[in-house]
Length: 292
Length: 202
Image (cartoon, rainbow over all chains, first blue to last red; front, side, top):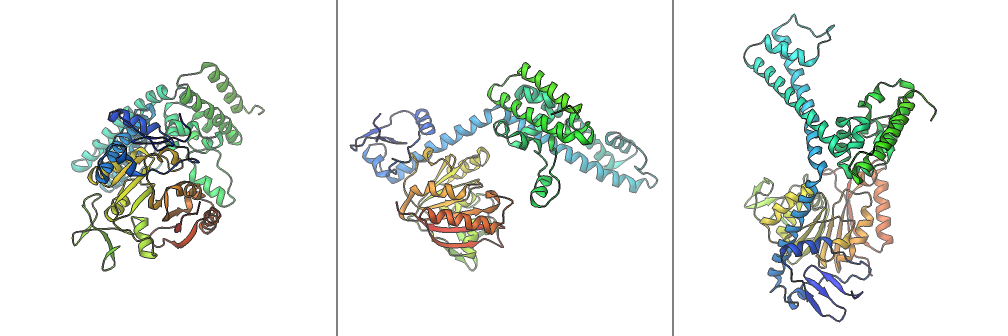
């Protein structure tokens, strides 16, 4: 290829001004422009009239119409490819799950307030009633709209449970290493917070450690509050079950291994048993307060 | 720019995002669009029918649609897939919007598509906004203008917006840009500054 040849979407122009129009069909054109890359130091800006003299289009209107059609097709292809990634659906699934949790909580709280008006003797104090049982009690003792609302909340909770199972299973498939270390649900949440598997795999361990602790992190950076020890990874039992003094240490070690696991998941896509065995051992050692 | 009283509007097919119509024209809300805010608080750059525009950070194509009402063609660059879906929809209804799914930090990927333009408008949520401006100034005609909407919080959420702003100005000046106008977009947008400049001479 001639070093000074300029490539544009409609064709290539040699340094003697000779234009070689691109003759492929729409598909070929789309592939061409998606992988075309100019050398900015020697780039000569596109002059649309050259497309006319090259015989690609008739005039300005035709030029823009063709370019637009090709760009729309190329962008459409880019979107389809992005959504074809296995993590794209998992991301939506886990966000829906978290949203449902929030909605279920809100509705249960409101329903409980309503229920207390109808049953002045009712109080939630000194009772360790799980929310699901509470909603069932409300449904059984209510009539009319409140009965229906309580029924809907229960339905929603059932759907939520089913979705959580699916998220977990999908995460095991899409991010086997991360899921093995921290469980499918939490792994999926990490991925969702990072914005996808690729962005997660690019995060340093220190960022993974505090992913989801944005408020605390910025409070720390702005003022002199202590730095957050953990974000989403706190949800994992090895972090929240660890004694307070070593919780930060466990979180740090776990995050370190998660950063490696996410990269394995993105680049290799399957479980790496040796890495996992070594990592589990290491995290367990940190949990026992071992020397780091 | 077209004003009906103190309302900025653009002339074109409505219904893009349920925008309000006024006397058959599309109301261009300053609280919603940073470029509209610039026309409210400052001078900006007069958009005219002969203009070719490169728009970096096109997002859902809301502001793009207004710019396209005024100008000949808008090359709308956006990287995130979700907003590009909307941008494509806008392009289907407007002959002069060319949607380009590309990263504004990598002009080499869209240089084979974009001709020289009269105006580059940059509204990207990136930390290196000044560097992006420097790189994309190659698309500007010698007499063209560059509007940089500086999202100071994207550069560094911890730093004082004023500090980010003066650092950005310094980078632009040292790259040879001539600063024409700078203005903060408050009360319409918080911590956003508009910087209007002209091309560095090669």
